[in-house]
Image (tube, rainbow, N blue to C red; front, top):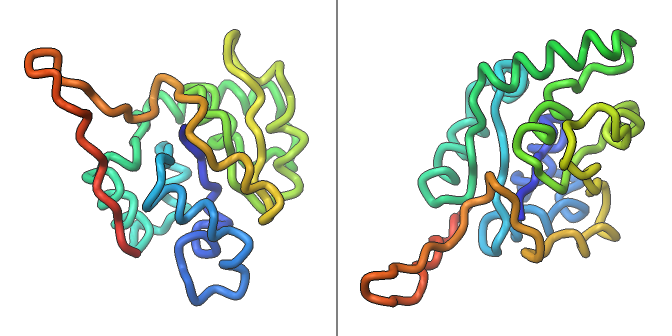
Length: 174
């Protein structure tokens, strides 16, 4: 299963010295040691990351098959369409809704209360895309499980030629 992590909580998720890391530690463990993967992409998302420490972390997660980069052009185009549909000033996380719509991701980790009504609007997603669950606190750790794998999530591949066990993804240290 995959997760889209909003830029406003990336530090809280991956920085163990953050005051609010305990709230988001299950997401960090699920992505770095468990079966979770991060979905990211789009120019606005990369700009919010600042191009520094966390973008490098996502690249490292990508080499460990724990992060998936969605095409920037696709995310930006979908975000433009969404912003035309909902021109309200409070709707400033259109790139998150676009990422969910393109990747069919079922979980979003955010602390932004203004984003929640737009994340829950079914009319903002293409047909066949579920409204995502939202992780905001330790009580939501039940969503950190591998039961639902969508198209963009990295899967373990079984070699048909030799019938070997699937290769496990390496664990990532933060």
